[in-house]
Image 1 (cartoon, rainbow, N blue to C red):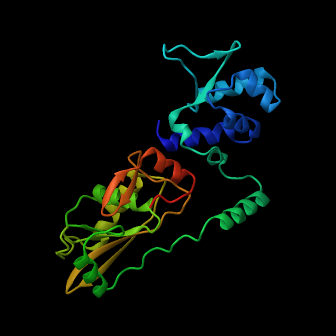
Image 2: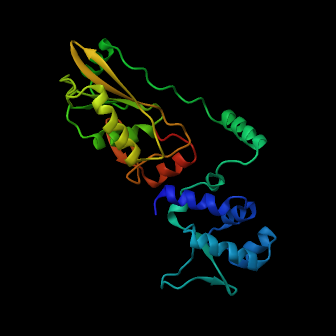
Image 3: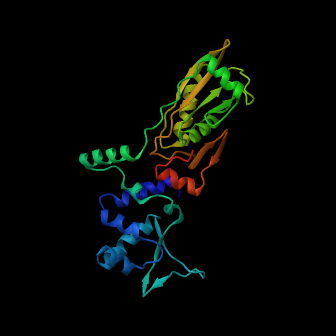
Length: 265
């Protein structure tokens, strides 16, 4: 199961069930069902029912010992969160608030605790592109030669979407910064690029594609917006992050930061 599916399942079973979500937050692999019932002031049968629903959804699992046997304490089973669920803060399962007042309150709270999101990088001028190509690829700039497959472009886009400043992919520039120009007009690259982004990146993302003439040669500029500090983007169900001029799969601790709305880079 991937992160997006796990989050979707969690939001479904916790929708309108604040008590169930509070119970989920207490599951730690140490307390048995009876202890959880006592802490939540609920009947043990109701707690057992909710734990079974979380288990069916793939959020929690019975704790097992070294021999593979399920752990019990005082005759009651002990549950723990599945490894993937441990990387996701419980509040991420709350989904979209139902109340307008609550929406307003949460937006205000988010604005107070989160710095303003950087704006998308502007489309560079001819001289700026020449300077960028001279300096080489870095955290924000990626060069792709003409003829590069749309899926490879989408992969770079996904990694940039998960970074604080976003970035720009230059189509028609070799790895060494040599400007060779595009092999197709902007209109002919736009459709396969947007289709590839739609089919391989989740959740949905939007990029801007512009054509810039550089010394009489046309270069296509793909502007990727900065991370919105809300969505965690996946390429073929894998979370990617751009670091320097390379793309890496996100590590568990990086996934945790992203789901806590904290930039990794």
